[in-house]
Length: 342
Image (cartoon, rainbow, N blue to C red):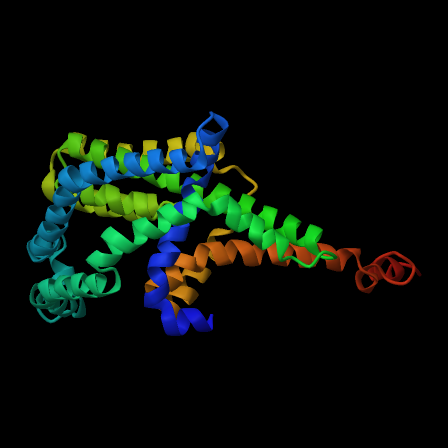
């Protein structure tokens, strides 16, 4: 925790590189089982990753950034259209002296004056946290070296375990790894699939900023229902402004998110994540809020792994407590059984 507090920005490329190596380790293991050496498997994964990155950088990222900038620029117009709609449909709610009218006017002025400034500040902050050197040099290098030496690092750590407690520590580490693998790798795949589906489907319907909405919805899908609610609300809001009167298009936008929820709940999450992860949505939100508030972007990056580890340790401690004499009592039965006697 102290290291995160004082050296968060310094540790960031190594945390990102370690996360990428952890995510890709099963792929390297499978390639090894197919007969490739660890070095050759790592080289093959690196080449494929570079090709994907180049395609994304040339095709997807410019469109995504352009749509995000346009969305911020058009936000004041959308707000004015929304105000005009309310004025026409509910004139009594927007009386010149009403609190609602004053609040909306103030909000519109703030958006118009501060929208560009907020975007520039956000981009500047992002650039200060993850600069080009980190993105294009340090993180890939760290990821490649850690992926290459992953098994050796695990073996070295195992040799350092105290022999008397090694079996219990290995059991806890295996449970933490299973939880992380089920959640991070599984939900990462779910987020990627759903984000791609939302973006393509919304763009096919003709919704402006469909790529941005799909990206946002997919990004926050790891918190159950939040991705669909946030992305659906944003998409429907934009659809109402763009397709007002064209109820078929608005219904298609709503149907896209409804179908996405059906696919996620009945196919993707059960198949890719499973039901034994044990990370409650409230626990995830709390961990992201606490660690993000304390350590910024680095804290949010380590929030989910730490939440998973803490959850496993809490379950282990609870299991040990229920096996102890403190819980069972001297007679080997829980104290509430004794209390049931007349």
